[in-house]
Length: 85
Image 1 (cartoon, one colour):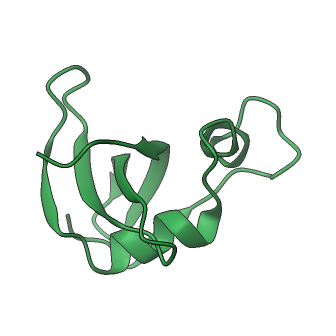
Image 2 (tube, one colour; image 1 turned 45 degrees about the vertical axis):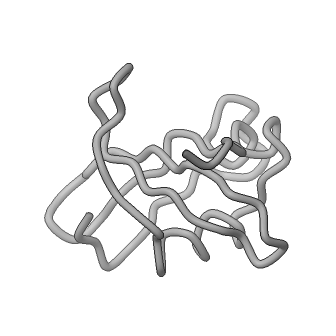
């Protein structure tokens, strides 16, 4: 997944990506940590979106799904803890 910038919605937007990841117990820092150094990358079987897997600073293994906005920008769609394969 190639990007220079991660786009985040207003944290107060109840339908935004910041609130959505918070519903799964994630914070922006958790997601950005995984995106900075994922354990692996791929494509979601359910949505077809690019995904990255990795560990948060607290050691939680998560998946992050994004959409490519342009050649330099991605927008996080969701992130949540998963079991390691």
